[in-house]
Length: 252
Image 1 (cartoon, helix red, strand yellow):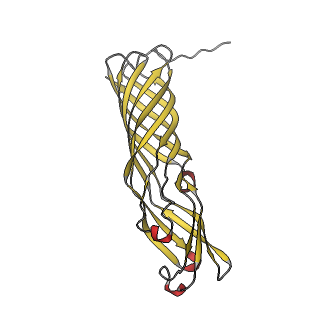
Image 2: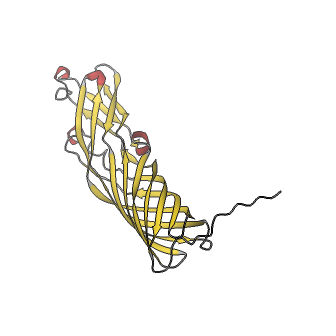
Image 3: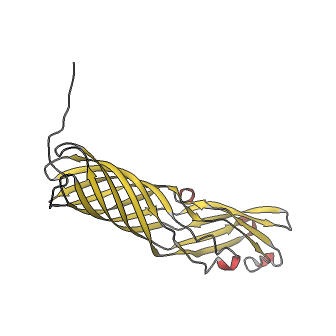
């Protein structure tokens, strides 16, 4: 016996000359991009960092650490307005917030010749918080009245809040607390999406989508770490991620 299940034929979705509003939320998982680069920096005297180590030299060996290493998955939410060009195409503008909790990782080591050993160096990085403003174009397949797949592209800018870091060498009782690491700034962003619109009524639908996002480099703040010869490690910060979200869409 053959069973067929079909949804009601509602025409929710883009329509020429009409507006819509969407509220969305989801997860944003980094897949590429470093929070900081690597560097090797000699420190002739550890005394300024710990008076008990006056006259003892070391070599800081910092290794690159990615967004995935430090922050892992972020939460994202926002608001979108769109305008229908036809029943297959629309342009949209979106405001999106992305947030991730602080992260602690081993960032490298400090080689101490007097001990002939490398002591672990840890870094704790403050919350990742970013505000994105983007505009884009979305194209739908299939006819109105049923679930419709779509593709989209977007361009815009993302303002990432300043990031601060605490660096520790526990075995040497050295802590550089709450050091400025990157500045709050805007950076270019771009992305592509694929998804599906599922009509629920004539003016309401649910959309599910996934995509790829790119955010350009951040601006390093060397005021605390530059004196240690680490001024180059924060000249990066670009982020590539895969966002997955669900939205409630209201057509006017």
